[in-house]
Amino acid sequence: MHPLLASRARLGAYLLGWAPIALLLTGIARSQGWSWAEAGALALPLCLLAAFLFLSAWFLCRALPLGHTVEGLGTHGMAWGLAAVLMGGLWAGLAWLVAHMLTWIPGLGALPKRVETALPVLTGLGILLYLASVALSYLMLAQDRAIEAERKGAELQLLAQESELKALRAQLNPHFLFNSLNSLSALTAVDPSRAREMCVLLSDFLRRSLGLGERRLVALREELELARAYLAIEQIRFGARLKLDWAVDPAAEPALLPTLLLQPLVENAIKHGIAALPEGGLLSVAAEVVEGHVILKVDNPLDSDAPAPQGLGIGLRQVRQRLLGRFGNRARFEAVAREGIHRVTLVFPLETES
Image (cartoon, rainbow, N blue to C red):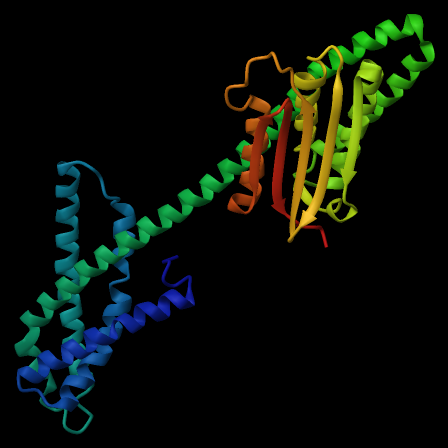
């Protein structure tokens, strides 16, 4: 279907665009000595006929997409010229037919004679109007292609985000899982009860992570529960070396955020902070609501003798990209190391399921 016929708004705007052409046609007729009645009686039906007759230009343009070669443009030009001459002549012939049909109206008896005299002018004007319709059709096709490209781009972006999330789920657990299994193996010989406890915690963590990974958005409450399950296992691994501090405002817990956004931050804090220090340290997770935004912070100690990190690692880059991809410029990501503490701060709008 022609795109103008598929939308009432487009069709209305298109028909309204023919009003100035009807006035122009009336003015040309008046300049040739026609009466107002003759000029108006012919101009209105002719423009209405042209409006629908020249819609055929869209089908020609769709069959002859614009190319980038001179040969292609030459071939298209011949087709456009031939179609313009045919449609211009047809439109002039319809003008002659309409003039004869209007002779029954008083004062329009001389209209057929006037139209016969003006047939060359009407044919030329029809050719120009048809070529203008060709240009308009190419503009509509270009707009439709741009909209389609934007839609496909959005689909590809969504697929990329889903692929990124799948990759994140795939890479989220391996090192942690290997370390946990090694610790579990050691505990079975020296402390079977703690080994059993670690098995239960590990099972709970894997079940939660798989459940969250199937969703695009989750409440911060669920992310915190997953982080607690993860840190409960790490607590068995590190013992007294790992100290935890939770400072979570209950008002922030229903906030929606991309799934598995907090987990990489906690893993990063363990891997590059607690595990790298013989004495361990304090891992702090804080969340509060300020002026309609959630401020989420993850702090961990740093080895003061270690070289300063150059830029963000893969995990933190993914967190930033996914945060900004969801909230745009309404969100903010910050990672700084200062006075022996590494802090990652996420700021995003408070949006809930309700």
